[in-house]
Image (cartoon, rainbow, N blue to C red; front, side, top):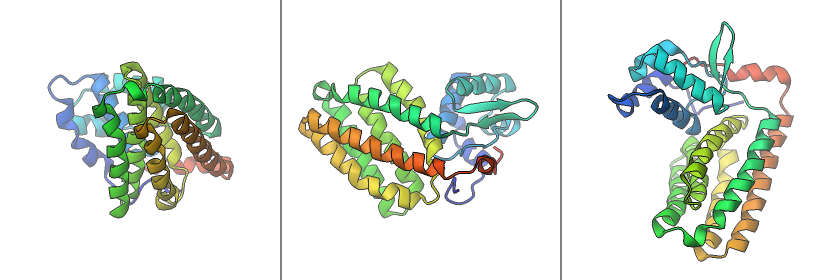
Length: 246
């Protein structure tokens, strides 16, 4: 089970986000940074979230970190193990099924507002598809997965609802944790590049009935693929998600 494309020093990479925390560092901002790194596939399931390493990388206090961890626990992106610490959450098949159940509700509702969304919002659909195609052409398959997240965030953005967009960000971070069950990022992500292009065409053309049918078909295929992969896992393999400490 592959969780990343090559080894990376996560603490060093996280230090690049220190400027984003800035002078007004808050637990909310730290939680947002960690959520973004989960969404980008940089923090795989089972990664230990070390207070020392993250505090040093971001320049924040333990109290701030602990509050940020509590936010991630609330968002179902982390778990706390007594006497062991906080870890990026490991999903199971039931989690995946529920994530897709919610996605169908949110993304379908957002599509119905697409006609009234301003051009700058609809343009994000094309931008996300192009982002994925460019990453694929350059062999950056983890980034293709991130572009996938950006596309579905853009679909949620059609709702013009900050609350839906915020909830979608949390949901997509949880979904990205499920992607790590796939052994080969290229084999997994490559077919969806065509799907993504086919998905946005009816949206941009204003054919919402066709877009909704395409979206449901797309989500059905993606959910089945992930659930099939989870069904092949043996329970002890969950420990394979804990190779890295952050």
